[in-house]
Length: 98
Image 1: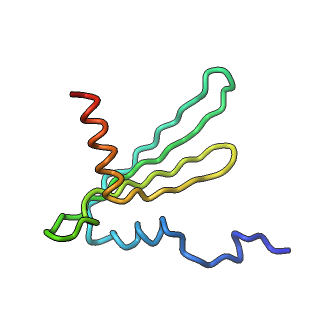
Image 2: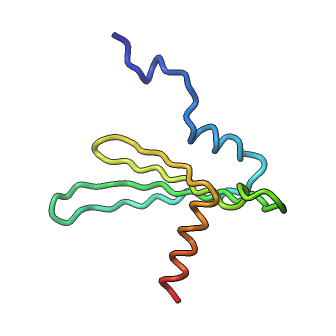
Image 3: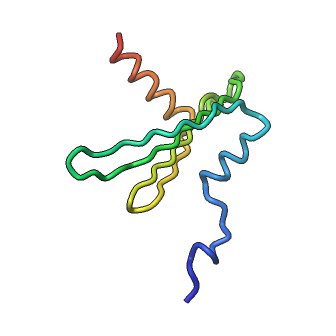
């Protein structure tokens, strides 16, 4: 039986979104953040990168897309947070700071 990762040639949603923004958006430098749980010593690594695509009138899907990769003992989870989700996070942060 072959490994699924070796036979699956489908492009992930994460890769499709990120690849679609290359050349049309500005990207921040990826930031790596490592956290360690104090009692268990388990570590989790996050890689965060933001892409900014200029907002044009009538298109709500443009803006900041946040890419998050989470690596832990169980594997990797990759999320491409669309502009509406990123904007909600930014608004919530601003409301807590006010």
